[in-house]
Length: 204
Image 1 (cartoon, rainbow, N blue to C red):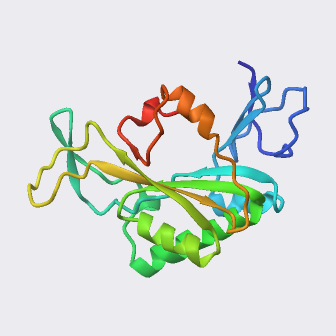
Image 2 (image 1 turned 90 degrees about the vertical axis):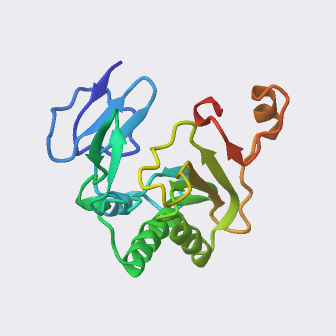
Image 3 (image 1 turned 180 degrees about the horizontal axis):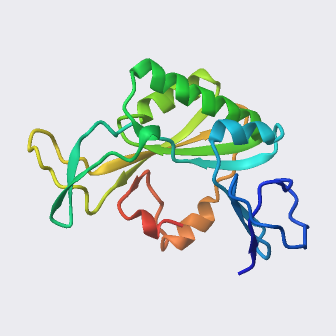
């Protein structure tokens, strides 16, 4: 696989054939053959560079705001769940303002018939859902991903947290989103794929 690393290329220019010098400022990986670019940038610095109404689909995995000093068990050892400053717990108002900010930019760059997928846990998904509605998106589905091997229930004070949610939404109520029902049914062996996924890695 051939890829380039740089921070100064046009984000939609897939025809550049020469090799570019590496940069540590804003690296991205460019798979020339498959026309894939991966950026490692701050969302709020990167999205403004994308033109309006040009993206077919967005898949977002925003911060869950879980990092509050809690612990879990990993391979029999007690480990901290903190992931970094970007995931630190915040006030409800701060979390919701954050979600509305990046979702507003996402809506701007989506095409008229574009859709967005957002995954999360109960820590952030309700804010995401409300923000989507406030911004005029149309929620198409709420997918429940049931985890086959969830984290252990160390406190024994709650039901075991064994699921995550994925919200699928269209840009507006007028959007004509694409849903390949027949293809999905064929892939699933003739069964209709429901909104509860028990093994996400087998999903098409």
